[in-house]
Length: 318
Image (cartoon, rainbow, N blue to C red):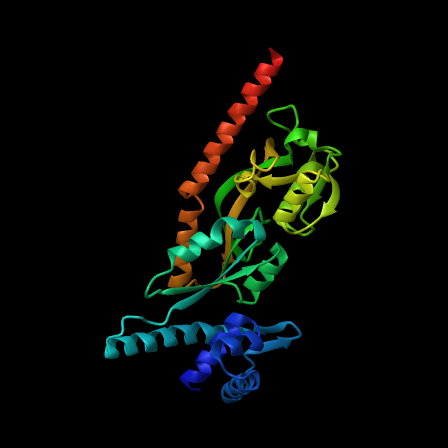
């Protein structure tokens, strides 16, 4: 076992497949596969489970990855001290999110860790909730931000932000009420995220509890596409205000709050694995960014919208 083998093994573990890891390391896929196989033979243990989509770490592979990352950081720190180069090897943290959360979080998070000598290298994985859980289970993802996940014993979950939900309609089709209840959604044609999305599951659970039937006319996993459906008058959708804040009032969209419905933006990680210092730094930055001033401005815009709606309806009543 040598340092090059450990570097190659670590990159495959982080990428989840040999093709992407080989591209990052600038080596051939066959050479990389051979190096990892040599490592497995020298340790007389299987480090990866191979499958058509790539690889997942075995239990002994996860043990080796934890030790390899520590060793590689120590070696790079020694090199930096000897050579006087203050740029140690950045620790890689892989974050999983949904498409909606990606829009509000990823760019600010990347900016927060950008610098001449970054100590954390970020990788982003976007997907539906079940795929994020699979990535966490396989150690391809270190940390995830999910929408209202159901509790699972082996996971730790921390709610970091609560966002109310809104019915998004064309301005001309907006409801007369300034606020809606779940009952007002009965039989409203909607474009929704496909199952098993967190927001879809949550909405259907809440509706079933009240005997309400939600009418899903169309499905798409892209919130931008959902808004296009709304603007064309095909259906309404249900989203947090942060997903439409820049378009309400300017692109013909209207947002009406649904009083009983809100989403929890939740940090999720495996509770049975120790977190590295780098992962803890990323988690703390996410906590900071998810309540950043931009979200405060979004909330202020929500309040202004509500006031304007109330004033218009008061004028109509006169």
